[in-house]
Image (cartoon, rainbow, N blue to C red; front, side, top):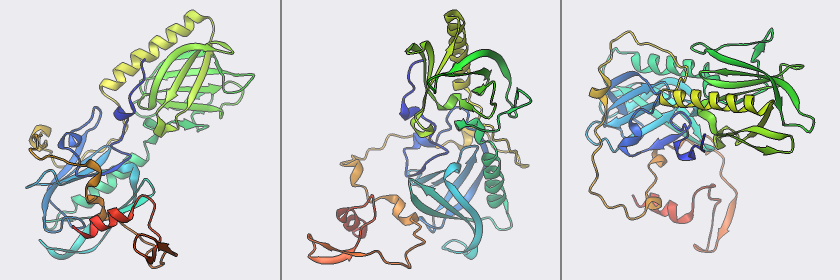
Length: 346
């Protein structure tokens, strides 16, 4: 298995992105549309703008109906809190709205969505129910070390998971002396656990595998598995004797990885009562823009409108700015004086 590019990593549930190319709003393999609402206002960043909100098993997406290039992608892994509060909507006035607080790359963003259809609670119920389903299915998507994976010498199976093979006599090469254990190869992940101490284990979902290969080590020929950077960037080594058996195990992992990659299982299961329209009718058509982008990094940062700074009741320590010849509040990490001037000049 060749190295999987980090650009192909699973980002949809782990990032908050603004005004992405329309191609990024398309469902990735394994992503499923769970619910959609056609009359939702982005009250926080685009007050007065009617749009469509879609809930998938990985994220929440919103885009303007008139200008689909104005859009949001909010991964469930970034969501800190979901609640309802009173908001002022240009289209509905003062009304109950859905508040979503997120944290991404050490920055907090706040989103407010207002349902323009009165008496319809689905905006809140769908988002909350899918988020809860996502939270309880992390084992499908996250690499896990020393988890409660084994009970009575048997793998605790996830819903939708099937064991294809169990391989005994697998040495984990993480220590100088090695640890003898067993592999469980399933349709979702690869699990290893030590024979003596079952709590010494690792669960590696196929979605987090960057590379699987055989190479020489100080212990002899070994199976090496590299995880994605966002999964810790681990390099895990295992030895299986004889070498012929090691090659068979690698081929089996490669085969199941290819099957999984064609249609990943993310584990999130939720069904709304109302029948959804076919996905083709909800897909935003991608059209090539005739706009020349002069500098990708010179944008005015659409996320500024959603920035949630809950500590602004406390000012930063003043520092002397040689460019201005004044004492100013210390600029937050990730911003520059020039970028702040660009924001104020919008």
